[in-house]
Image (cartoon, rainbow, N blue to C red; front, side, top):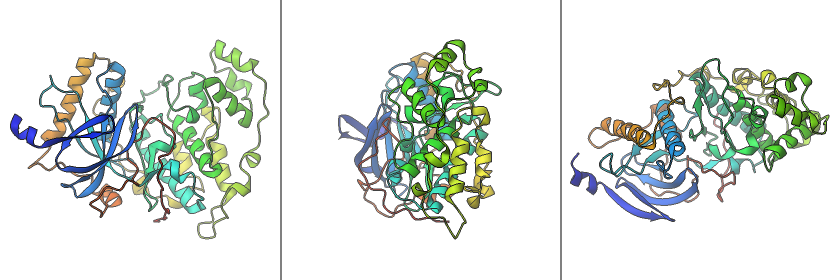
Length: 417
């Protein structure tokens, strides 16, 4: 594409303190979120004829950490293809050459709300269990490819009013090397599993702890373990669940074990005390879903010792979840990760920049007649929107780094199954 033609395809617009330079196909840009990872706008795509969310990555080439995170997120998002994982619709840069390259824009599906809003709602068992089922389906799809999300939280899970749920934000996700435990990494504090807090390294069911925390929040309407820092986070966990057994403590390195052993010992509370029946909706006659089942699932996810915590496959078979079981959703083909050294890669900022530029150009090379490919057919219907105007009540399919909910209303959740 020649330089003049490319320049004519773009226009610039100020969004808050930032300037978005986007393709003319995207109109009606409105800011809907911001954070350390980037600024997000809703927009109307005149090519796909739908509302979308556009995320401008924040200073992706500021340092090696930012650049590696941007590359990882882009590569993983291009690989995944599941109805419960957010769909990447387009990737572009307004710059014309590698030398000028500095901005990356990701275009994704636009959803109605994130889970922060839903947590404030009174959900019946059908909606609660169906939302959890979809979370687990998405997680299983990632785990099947050796991808651990690592940063599941309410603001990273988005929904539509028909109860459709999608997981997003892969900036912290990483692939798991077979047989190796992952090292600790900074994730949102409230949903950190004990093995992360204690620096033990972790495996795939670190994501299940996060689901347990999110489920508890949906039941209680407040954060389960609101720690101020690592130490306070651990204290909040053991005060409620009890000091772990000596068997678990022996797995800790000596300095951490000494600290844990010197803390006051807590007996913890039973799950009947932590989650009494009054917190749950009335038992469901239709699907035979009960508070006792929901509580049992919580008790198997919120287990301090990861070796005794339920797996995603076991959770999908749990009576509270299995009523929705659909093999086409649970056993969808795993994403194919072409870059087997995705997390072992170490490069200079300039090298990361070139790798990301190649990924963006690869997307453009697959463009024909100016039309960027749309989402797979299995995603399209779930996110279509008849309105040509972006609603300010839409919440982006791309989260910010904060845990506070957007000031929007999720609207009534309809259960579509």
